[in-house]
Image 1 (cartoon, rainbow, N blue to C red):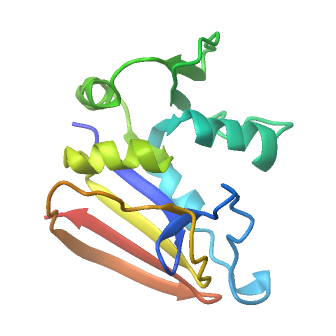
Image 2: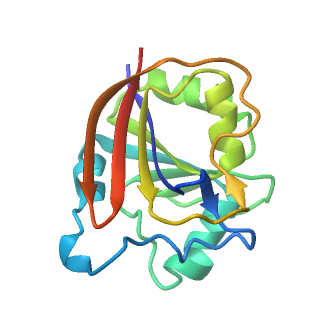
Length: 176
């Protein structure tokens, strides 16, 4: 069965976006010479991405307006907006929990929950995330969109690995 992974960055105080929904604070404490490419290693085992409408909209309007950066993957965008799907981007208006159950039973590599917070919390509340790969950025935002909000249950995790570079800490957990 395919695994579901959360791969996301958050501020030291637990936010994934600032109070204006921006993510331009996602950087280390110094030069880029010290950065490690954890993303490329992570996506080797991924062929499917799930994201909410706000995350999709931010990617196509701010982060990469000229090119769809996830072209190597099938992306499901959970939305109430009626948009035409393509081979690589599928706009879905269905229960995300039911969709993830369906995708997990199918063939393929692992599934990446890319964002946003509402979608992530739905999967956490149903204990459907197998791996939590959280990058902690050395920034205190004070407010914004929390990564973990209104959890319904305790979920025990096992730490697999940590790494630190440029003031950033990567935490890699699996469900126990």
